[in-house]
Image 1 (cartoon, rainbow, N blue to C red):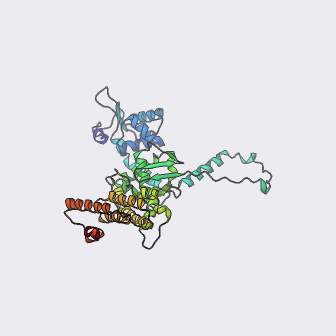
Image 2: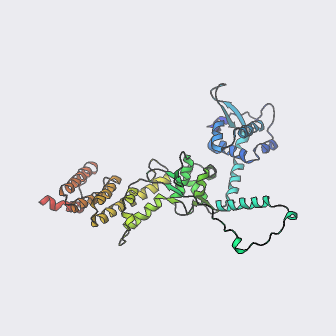
Length: 394
């Protein structure tokens, strides 16, 4: 890591015989791009020019000038990888690393002034109006137009944003898939999409970066927010209390959860959409498979339990309506979620019995019995055994 290698700095942080000067350091870091570059070096161990360029999104000539300024001010030093012929790394010196509390303090102060994107856009609009307003001496009061001549204000176009968490992460804006979205942006959107309410920034940062201090976690969160692609920023509502997904954003997990809860609610008749093939397909999908963050795994287990119960309930409803092919699909989907779950196998046996397929019902029972005997050393309970007891007697 660059922190370790940077520990080999010269004892007095000299370059070309020049002592470090606080005034020169302030000149080097006293603008937006400089602070962003220092932040990446401090908290994300970025050392190479190409990586600074990619993560910060700064023009090459500006980046080169800023890094030259850091080197000249004694905040960074050059290091050739693999000797004199390798790529140059820019490592923070001791004085550069000492900027950490300054960057943290600035980020904490900025958090306290957080405003929503709508408010920020409104403020920008006010600034433009003020900038474009001529001096008072040049203003002439126009004649008041008739009521019919007053133009109607057009509402700003609202983006149609959809976030998918089931099966895999996917983001679509106005029907167009946003490809090559940075993993940091995916994690940020996924975390907020998993919550139905606003999440405090500190709570969110601690959950997403549990292995670092609260201060560093807060910096990482701000860094992830700053690197969001423009097309995705409208998906997040930023307020002083915290962050949340904007109300207009459609999240597939939320729709699937609502359908699942209606299916398992006692005494509640689900609507036609809850029993549709599309809903059964949605209930068959895992939540963010191959994501292993603790905050994902906890939600994934809750979703697994809910969707198994919902699929079994759907199989029962569809069986009672005589839609046996669809009922069989729902029951098999429940079995795929947890092959050792007895109630899922029982649902499929009931579907076969309703269709008069006794041999299929026995085959499902025998497979299940062999499975739990070999894996768990158990026998089926009387509840599922009773379903095929009459068939065994005949």
